[in-house]
Amino acid sequence: MKIGFLHSIIRKEEKYLLDEFRKRPGVEMKKIDDREQVFFLNGNNYDYDVVLERCVNHSRAVHALKIFNDNGIPTVNTPEVAEICGSKFLTTQALIKQGIPTPKCYLSFTPEAALDAMDKLGYPCVIKPTTGSWGRLISKVNDRDSAEAILEHKAILGSYHHSIFYIQEYIEKHGRDIRSFVVGDNCIAAIYRLSEHWITNTARGARTINCPVTDELNEISVRAAKAVGGGVVAIDLFETGDGLSVNEVNYTMEFRNSIDVTGINIPAKVVDYVLEVGRK
Image (tube, rainbow, N blue to C red; front, side, top):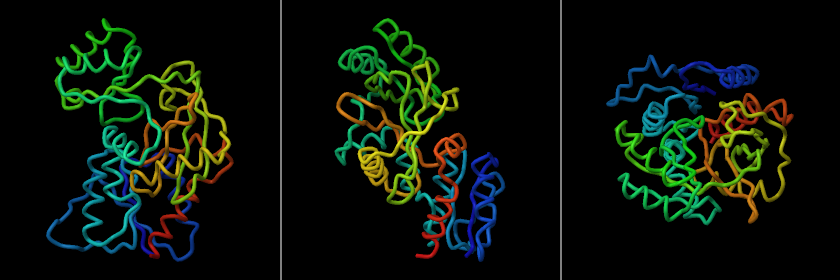
């Protein structure tokens, strides 16, 4: 089986995955550096049974996955999954459509409308760019004065990331949230992310401990994964008085801090799934 390994820089996650592929008999793997690719769109000269995407850049991932898929090569994940998960708006829409609990959310296109949305939602609330990761450019808005200041800054900054206003209900985490890992039809592991800060991303310094995969966590995680198209994804969840609520779904998931604490060989599970897709 010929595996295409689409990547940008090689981080710890990519090293773990590459090591797992090398352990598998009968697997020929070729690294595809997205920084060096020139795709000829009028011809198909791609000789892969399946491609695993591990790009850092969202736009590169979506475009490259689309090219491979259109040439009949299955990919993990699909371009549709990448596109949905790469947009907080599209992810929220997919979750709502499938009846999956998710925080209340407003979307608006002008600072004036965004301020009205925040007043309706109530303070504190959270404003995010629709595209982004690692907790960047996310603001907790504690009151109307803060809202006016943040919206003025976004209007002056003027980039695409600041032109769509995605405003979400603030959920009190009490120092932790949950990240679960879904591969195919199974939630294989989960972690608590612990932080005194309201942002609990591990990229921002959160600690991790194992989170037991209960029936409730497995069910909502798998449902959320299927809502965005399935494959290999990580689900970010809040614990609320009404049960678990899905915040985001991530399609090029990071797992370096989750292998030891969960005791699950996450890269091996991912490689098993990629090889299964390649055999179909």
